[in-house]
Image (cartoon, rainbow, N blue to C red):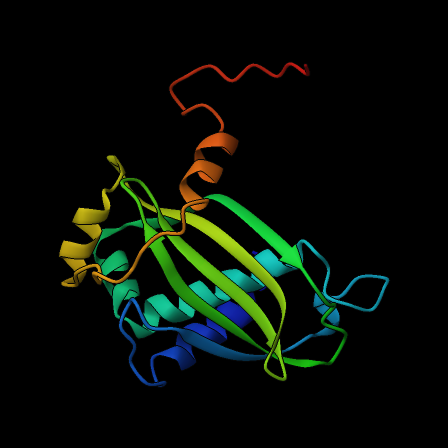
Length: 182
């Protein structure tokens, strides 16, 4: 992770911020640092995903899920992600990062994450995540039960999300994935 110092700072400060439900929206106030930008003077396209990691960690810590994950030795992993850019966040510019659970299917918990400047969306991403243990991927039912929460009835995964994940997925780790162009 490119933002290790920011992550450590966030883990320390998130516990002091107001608690959230797993299904609330997390807001993290940030500034584009010199380590975030590229030669064009704006946040590098690849850096957004590292910064979005921080937003998901903030939500997990404030919702109490992080402690549960550490206790159970569960690890969060990203299965798929897509991002759309509208405007550039420039060096030293203040912005907020907004993170919320977009929905779930039988395999993934999907997050919607945004970089917002003065109330305007600059960048938006959709990220499919899983939690894994030593024994493999956990079901969302196991995760919700351990967290002591239920999926809200009004949480409806947008129709495009599940086909996007399925159509862009690589074969599972126990299946061959030969490197062939064509």
